[in-house]
Amino acid sequence: MALSDADVQKQIKHMMAFIEQEANEKAEEIDAKAEEEFNIEKGRLVQQQRLKIMEYYEKKEKQVELQKKIQSSNMLNQARLKVLKVREDHVASVLEDARRRLGEVTKNPAEYKVVLEKLILQALFQTMEPTVILRCRQVDVGLVNEVLPAAVEEYKKQMMNQGVSVDVDTDNYLPADTCGGIELIALNGRIKVPNTLESRLELISQQLVPEIRNALFGRNVNRKFAD
Image 1: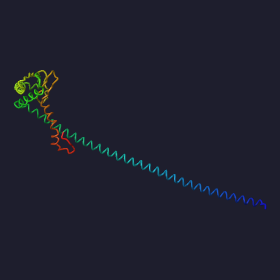
Image 2: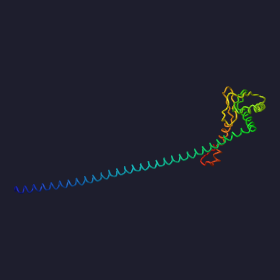
Image 3: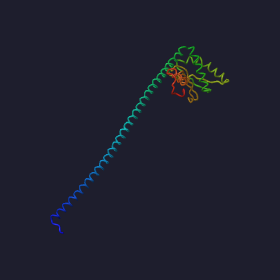
């Protein structure tokens, strides 16, 4: 039985409505899936950026903490250096005071003559040369000439009569601000033996500085060796 135009139109409308409904449902399904995927991706990106921010600030905190430790260490080292500087200055002042007191020895000619003779004899044993030149302060020339024969005689005695010729240098003197003592020169200047009071003090101070530090500041518990 043939359909009338009205029936055909009705079926067409029905089919169109069905197709449109299917299309709307499919579109809604696609939108829902897209929204779900969008939310998932958005959550992933947000979490990723959150982790990056946390890592950034953790790194910054570590840098700040490290900087604080470095600054604290630098300040501690500077404080230690200042303490050491003050201590070394104090030790130096003690040695300088000892040097000033050395000059008092020369004020007593009798005592100073004994010291000069011993200094000359020590220097002769250090050089062990048959001919030497002796230098002293200009003010000490007289005292040196007085004690020199005895020192030479004692040297000869202890060296089994091996003599030594000592010429006092009257052209070149030790500096006037030297505390005292003598200097021997041999082999045209290739051998020089300083035996001034300052040189003796320096030699002794190298051995006594650790003891001076202990006496002034107490023993350093962190120091393994005394020298």
